[in-house]
Length: 174
Image 1 (cartoon, rainbow, N blue to C red):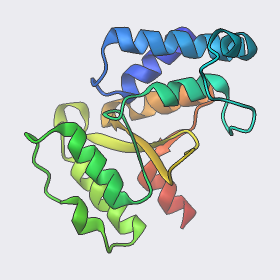
Image 2 (image 1 turned 45 degrees about the horizontal axis):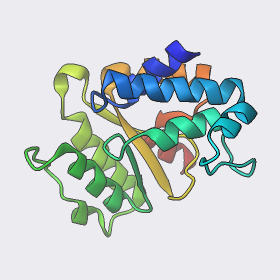
Image 3 (image 1 turned 30 degrees about the horizontal axis):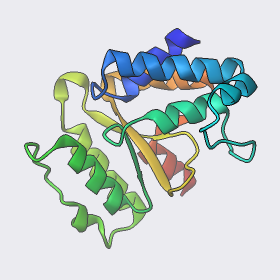
């Protein structure tokens, strides 16, 4: 399981995390999956209980990702603001977050995905993917290289962690 966790976290972090950070999260998550009670006893500062809709190991993964990797918001405008901020001022986007303010969710998400898909061409662009069950926000997503999308989804199934292309998921809801 630990090897799958390392690969999964590596791919959903798209180069934004060090190998040491990835291994540390994978270690903790593997322990939490294997022995939730023991993990909670060894880490009394963790604010997790049985009311959470996801297993403790998944909660460790999701809760340990930095804000440059996992984006959480209640609107696509705010989500896109977080994404653009994570790239820093040197990266120019064709659309601005405020241009998404009055658009329907599907239109906004489509525009975001077109923008992200046109970036980092050597890795197949980026795909915005929903990750896990959102706990505090409406939207919870990561960026994955297009070339890694199929493998990330396989790993998600193997690990029991929901990960799906955000645009396809929203279209399926409609």
